[in-house]
Amino acid sequence: MKKGLTILAASLIAAMPAFAGIESIQVIGEGPSRDAAIDAALVSAVEQVVGVDIKSERSSIDIYQENEDGFEFTEATTGGSTYSSSGNTTYRVLSESCDSGFCKVRLQANVEYDDDKRRQKSLKGMNGSRRTLAIENFSGNKHARDLTKALEARFVQDRLFSVVADRSKPGVDYVLRGKVLEANTTKKVTDTRKTLELTGEKVGSKTTHYSSRVIVEYQMIDLINNQIKWSEKVPTTSSRDNLSLLIDISSRKIFDQLKDNIYPLILLHTSDNNFVLNSGGKTVKEGELFDIYAVGEELFDPYTKESLGYTENKVGRVKVNRVQHKTAYVSVVSGDSSNMMDLPVARRVKTSPKPSSSFSTKKAPKAPVERTSGFIIGS
Image (cartoon, rainbow, N blue to C red; front, side, top):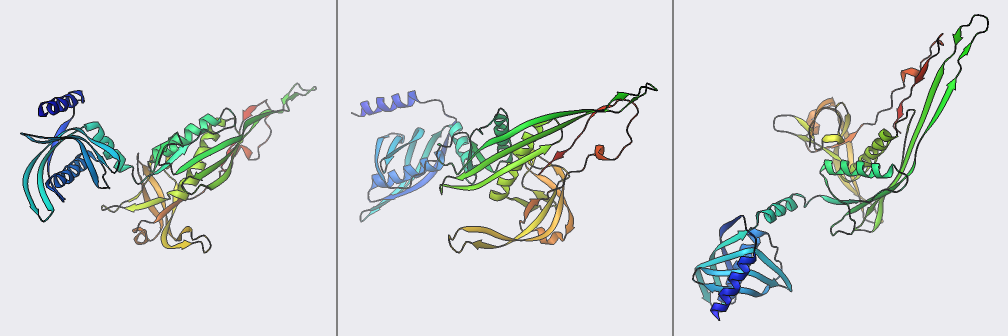
């Protein structure tokens, strides 16, 4: 019988892929019998090395044998669930004691691990505190696809969200969906050129005017509470022929609104006395201004008991001097920097568009002129 078990174990090992290495650790297990204590130590070893999360009491070990080297383990069940060690795991009993139905053992465990799985476990741990966001394809006209891609790029680069494409995946917290209601450009040509009959002189001008407009409606759905968390209609207009730019500006507006609601920027104070925002890349621009607010008391809705956020007290303003991939360095332009040490919130200062110089009063040119002018309105 032992020969048959040995052949079975050898077959299982031969069928397994190559593993990156073996980690040797000492573990302690307790139980009502020697075997139960070994079981407990075995599960603890596999959990620590491979990352199996065992929360209920183990009921049985399905493939488990003792040989001259110790104990070999490949698969077990716990609470009706099956888990495995990813590879062959051997154990040697270093010490054991049993008294009145209680046993305690100390094992030397050698656990094989798959380096890819270990890396995935590490990445999963890093992403554990992030909200998971599913971005559905926006509907509307041909520009909807570009808007969806621009939004995906902004949320992915910001790092605070785990972005997925499928809302049906487990663990999704929010779903972003929307529609491009309008995205078009109109062109108007005004031609006042003419030739004077008496002198033959050409006077007047030819001017081309553009009017571009993008309107996007979006909803952020809280899947956990099954409710529409935020809903907004975002207009962006321009007096230029630049729809692609307006689409990108619209994506930034939507991103800024949602991030400010879920993850407002935080001002960090470093040990070398620098102030840094916890975001960079394309989400922050050099020269931008941010108002800094100290966070106070948390407020709750008296009817629903839902958190309404925290009180905020403005303590100053900062300017972005240098943008990196994940952070942005700022300098204090107003306020006392000593009031900005305790992780205050940073909110972007909205600026009004600068009027185009083409709107200034000029004398009509004597020769025909063809020009295109305009500016972007960020509202």
